Image (cartoon, rainbow, N blue to C red; front, top):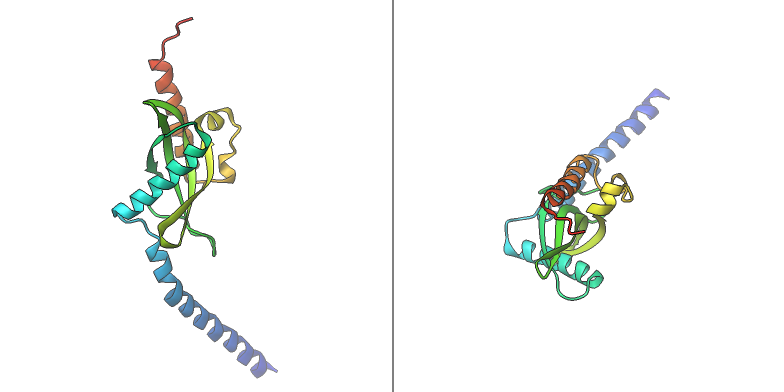
Amino acid sequence: MKSQRFRKDLSCLLLGVALSASFQTNCAPVFAQNLPSDGEAFKQNFQECLETYFATSSKGEVSISYELLRRVPTVSGVSAPKYYAWAKVMQDGKTLSEGAVRVAEYEDAKFDVTNFASQKDINSGAAKIEDTFPAALCPEIRRRAATGVEERKGASVNLL
């Protein structure tokens, strides 16, 4: 009875080791290829994705500036790698919106915006950033949202 149990346990252990080795061999290159490089293709594709996303919600052409909040993507299970950035949307030299954005990467460095939390929604509590963004990034997102408001308060002039 004990020898049967031992064989079963040993079989499960060997199967686990084999699957782990297979995962490392087959999946490691996929994770490595999803790391952003300093290459222009990554920057250009990411920029175009943001411009396309924000242009559809704005009237006319917009320009986007962004800063990645984390250099490496977040990879969870088999889902697409996610990048997190702080984006600023401008039109005719004026800021239309800014906030935290989550962007998924698919094959061939194709990107898709999955979520956007505006600075206004973050500060009012309407955007539940903890539901979308990694917990480690939430303090930085809140800091950026609050800093932008304070900068504008000091620079604005009330003409009324």
